[in-house]
Amino acid sequence: MHADRIGQYLVLDLGWNGDKYLHATPIHLSAIGDKVWVQYDDTEESVVTDLMEAGIPRENIVLGFRHPKLGQHTGFAVA
Image 1 (cartoon, one colour):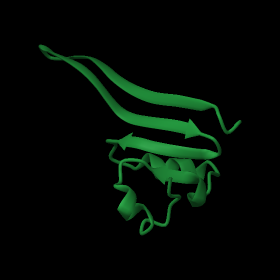
Image 2 (spheres, one colour):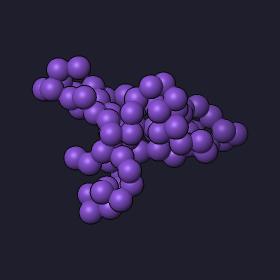
Image 3 (cartoon, one colour):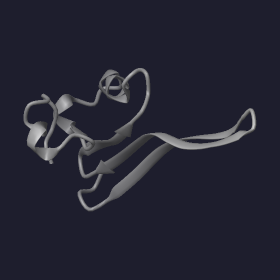
Image 4 (cartoon, helix red, strand yellow):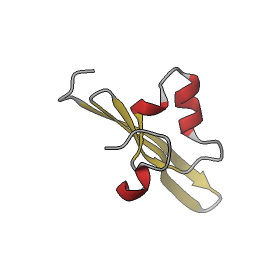
């Protein structure tokens, strides 16, 4: 992916649960340059595991939902 291109990928959960309408975004990923930013992950099984199983190395995954000061301690890429 070209460094100045950004792609946003979201998984939406919408529909009805009884009388309540659901509209949620359990997964939000951004492709920025050669990194995949996990902006939000509200899944039982981490989407990060799926990304690594798909061949994306840890050093190309940024945990965007973690404070930048903690990023250096995660073993993943930092911004």
